[in-house]
Length: 96
Image (cartoon, rainbow, N blue to C red; front, side, top):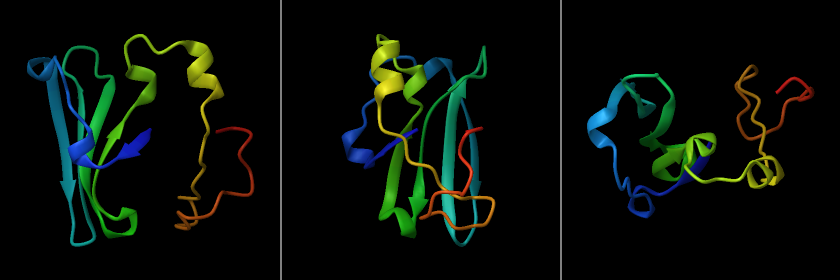
């Protein structure tokens, strides 16, 4: 997923075909948008202090007209969620 600020994201079409799964705690809030028909996650938004507050995220594999070459050559950042160490890459990433 690519991350950005909400004001830098604009959904140009398809809002009527989306469903939402949302979750909120004292520490964060997130809303995942996905296709109501095929269930593919497209984007989301939320609030997490550690990410600088409000954010939007985009499932880059769901972007129309994104060439496979661009997708596989894009930089990847790994986060160690298993150890709740989100700002460090996990020791093993070959399976990710």
